[in-house]
Image (cartoon, rainbow, N blue to C red):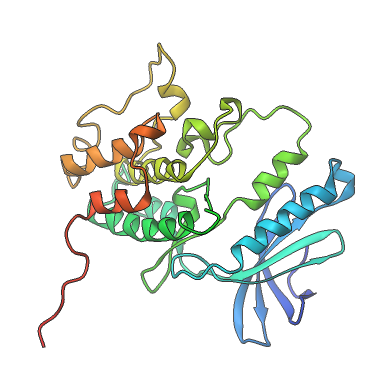
Length: 295
């Protein structure tokens, strides 16, 4: 069941008015809606768990609801606030803050010049905000790994915040319902580390998000997608590896030190990457972030 503009949806204590559909996937959609009780605009993520899809729907629903509940207590300026979770009909719903603004991918597409390269100072400023959010997520009592960091999932809000969106709950559920073998990475392949590919048998951890953020920085600075981890792992790969000068030559605002930092974040082996969001942030910005002003 998909909702239409003008429809009403009853939550646990609030009735929402659907304004428009923002996006739709194979098993769900995201809507912009009005919460007239609390006088705010919200985003509603809908997961359509129709028994006709097959699979163990009860188990999948329980996992989805659990993951939604994990997100609800989060409180960080670079992560959307989650307001409530509920089920209606055969669907599960997650209500969260609606983030105004543009994705970093959209900003890149609007950047003047044929190559669409963004100045390093802007990219680094955005990355530091994302790393603040990742440190918060990764240091939760039960660490939360995003698993799909890319320019499309980072929104620059009007107040200057970079907000990390789309924690990939629907993508994980959709993959559990697929009847065929998993041949793609969990996440977007150009930004996914090798351990995130279904065939690898490896486990993701905070260093997986470090790789994806490094690949995101590479893409914004270079003006094109980063080389895929799976291609870089091939013995006789003809794809362009991460060679010294690859970024500094094509984007003159990138210093060699920053290029080295990004390439370390994108190392194939997790042990060779930065081991935490804090470590990467301190590498990017080793000086004091806040300077006391004189009285």
